Length: 402
Ligand SMILES: Nc1ncnc2c1ncn2[C@@H]1O[C@H](COP(=O)(O)OP(=O)(O)OP(=O)(O)O)[C@@H](O)[C@H]1O
Ligand SMILES: [Mg+2]
Image (cartoon, rainbow, N blue to C red; front, top):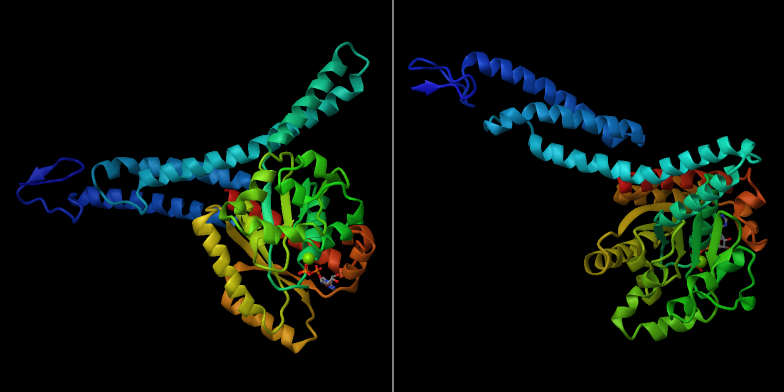
């Protein structure tokens, strides 16, 4: 005898749908499922298309709530949505929690800053000074626990703008209030030099840090409250030979900087080669940015670079991803630049930043004065382009974390 799976009505002449439901249950349930499905899909689309954490959080809650409504049908094996409601609930609870965890330090920091502002006018009142001192301790402990996002700027081709991009992307992030650390990972020491530091006067460099001869504190240079640097010098040239002998040396950089806290970003300026130093940078980083000058052989080199990144990702560093390729030194008057850039976009479209760094003499001049573009010519095209790039990097970083 036929029996409806939902209302338990039974009868010899009762006709059941494919899902084992009587006609009235089928219509009613189908309507509810369709409506709920639409709401869930809409929320998923919104989550994927926005960067606003508040919207993501409220949409996660909507999905969980709506998916819960469908659980009763899943239990009776009535198909509702793919992935199944229980999988959706699990997935979006995890997403929700990871956003909360990510925003927590920011929220606590905001609260501490507010408390400090409120307390400041009352510093002559008994124990308020002590309270402010405690707040400051809490703030510094908190900032030490904010884990940095490590980004390596890599291209084995020389002169494509790796160093210029590391300095000015970092400076753009600093303009947005981010604390960041630059690592000069090239024995040419162009980054060290480009920030106005004389490599000949250095007591220690990244080379000594990797060898475990000095601590991070000893080698760090604080150029401003937002910008710090681990410099390089010519001794790093020895590293290529010295460290290549043992495959375990691929983790030297990662281990050397693993305890560094209090920075939101660490940017690594890599040398123009695919040797042990670049492998070290890939093993330490979470993200890779590839500066690419739209010249004739650009694409050929990129394929090889992608293979190496994939190799490191599979064998040594699972968290590694390509954040994007950034077109550099772009001159739209040059037909070759336009053609190559179009080709790059065609074949690597998803991996390209919207921002393009135009050829701009101020960028070259700024490094020769040991300044960032924002210090040297804040109104130049170079400053505008690197500001846009840093905004994109911040947006992408948040997306990746979530
Ligand atoms: N957008 C730009 N406009 C004009 N000049 C630029 C631009 N970007 C970089 N340059 C200049 O091009 C030269 C090479 O740039 P940079 O040193 O940043 O490249 P690189 O990839 O780090 O080189 P290397 O591989 O040798 O380390 C420098 O003189 C720099 O000032
Ligand atoms: Mg360089």
